[in-house]
Amino acid sequence: MFVLLNSIAIFVSMKYLFTQVKIPPLVEKAVLSVGRCTFGIYLIHIMVMGSQPLIRMQHAMLNMGINSLAACFIHCGSTLLISYFITAILRKIPPVRKLLG
Image 1 (cartoon, rainbow, N blue to C red):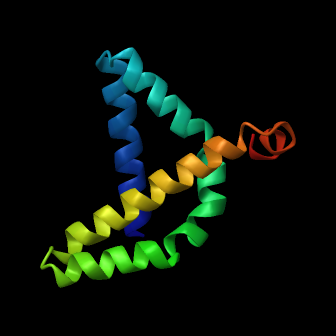
Image 2 (image 1 turned 180 degrees about the vertical axis):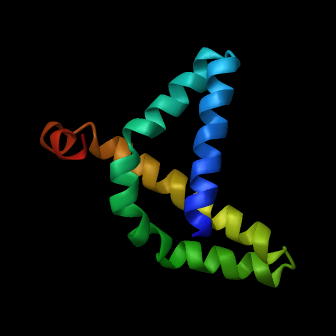
């Protein structure tokens, strides 16, 4: 239930923000690029999230004394970025481009 409420709140907030505020073209281009890759990110993120290098990175951050919440955010952000780059590369292959949308 909490995920649903948070998702609605974020969607409405972003919709309002982006209709009221003019964002720079570079940021707009980046957001649109990530938006085009969301299905691929969704398909790949589980494999990336469970990969050994990311798990080791998270354990190393915890051993260094980094707050576990901060380590979780870094882990999620790294998963998103790696999944995005894999999807962006796969979108360059014509047959795969049709599958990923």
